[in-house]
Picture: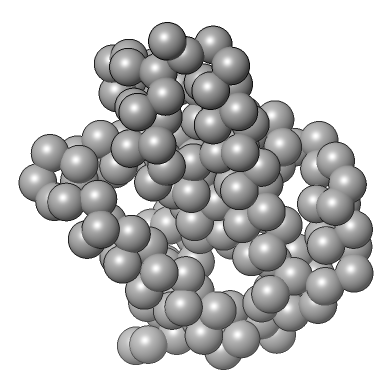
Length: 161
């Protein structure tokens, strides 16, 4: 039962089964989930929710890792969920630097995260190639999310009012 739940969780409830661009679909769904959550919860609650999902993802990947075909299976998309949440969680910083509708922040966070996740510039590519196991699967997306937030913060700082 728990193994079945882990597979559903890691695939973000069947999004990982999509043939073409499951990571992009996962990131898009994450933005929608975030927009729903932000209407009901404080940002700190969403942050702790993200931390819990991250920690459980590490455990679930460790328990299910041998069942997958490759080192970084494409059908595991929970890492995209975590990576996409990072630039979204920085929205309060963006709002102080450049007041805009929350949807603009979400769109820019989505585009930048996908840019960093797909192209994997250094050090993301280094982490992706040299880190094994659950950390290897998760950390390249975490760093891509961090870089996305950093670029948005710097951009809003210079273009802000």
